[in-house]
Length: 465
Image (cartoon, rainbow, N blue to C red; front, side, top):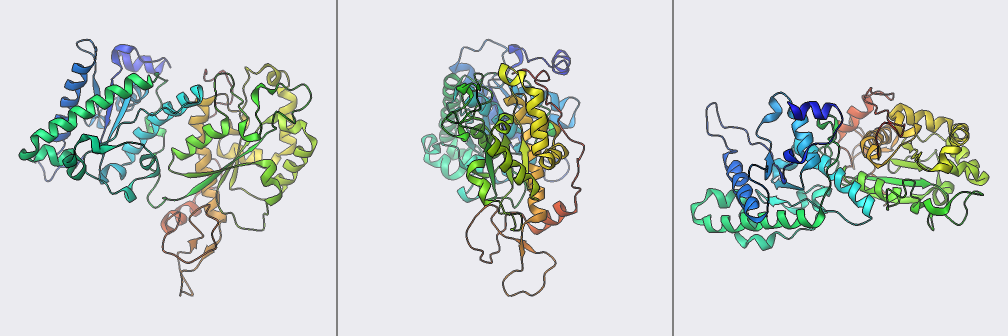
């Protein structure tokens, strides 16, 4: 009861209820009423891992070595318990299987944990990887979604039979008991090593029910989104503007300095990639001459805007011209650090000028997510609102992308998009598309306006850095 009330009050979870690792797996349905529970083998693995972790660490007696979702999502408080565990565990252990990557719930768990890694990477400007995957059932590399495919992990050290049969095969077959014990012990050692190396800090629990899946939706493999930054470099700043937030190009703009050591373009790139997108990066100065509203879009896009950019008259005019062209598949995000004293002193003036320069895009931005246009206070808020902004841009892309008939056809009820999303190769008819026709139809039928799920956290006081 204490944990639930503590989370409602917005506090952090006490160390006494922080699990050392989080075991994420896809529940297997029972075969017939009253049949044996197929997840009993996962529970055995979990107990064995906990035993090894306790032996390999100095965790006190009674501490939670691990956390596993034992069907708690059907009971009261499951979202709070999952959110607390994902916000405090030191290592995330996904059990790979074809069923795992088809599970939206598992994708949500992965996404929630990944946000902590992205925040730590932004603060330290160093890679932070506390995901230790395990093979429950081997999965062909071609079936791995982007976030799993990008993991740098060598399974061969756990044994040859583990690689070919997975933990499920080892645990089910008596002849492989020794190989099972070796694989589990090596997995436990890897968990402890990563936990001690990365030293991941706890964060505020997220609302597990409202977050997206890191695996995206079926049929979205290969889609691309562009991150574009409209900002100055330190070489052409407005008079009197401090250069400490800027670098040699707009892509090095870091509005959350000194809390963040990583430019916001690359933080946004990490967040977009965690949604199973590929990314391209550009500056507005480079892209401004290439916009043509008469041409169909090739990818959705996020435009990250520094309000100080309106102090440069040439850039302001290019932004105003861009705003006159109809490109609803480009969504605006406006980071705003009120701990930056220069920005705080000129906030009213810069806000007014940006609204006058980009009235259309700012209006579209608020329809997608108010906080994105009103001012994103910090990295934590950025991680919360960006999935909504990306989804809105993807929907608009689907409505406006050029469609083609399949080769040899003169009519189809389900036209295909040029793809994959964002790829610039000449069009050649192919069965693979960035979004399946059913998804395109569903997106097209949805409403352009606000869906009522906005996160309005534009004020820096709403969420502390």
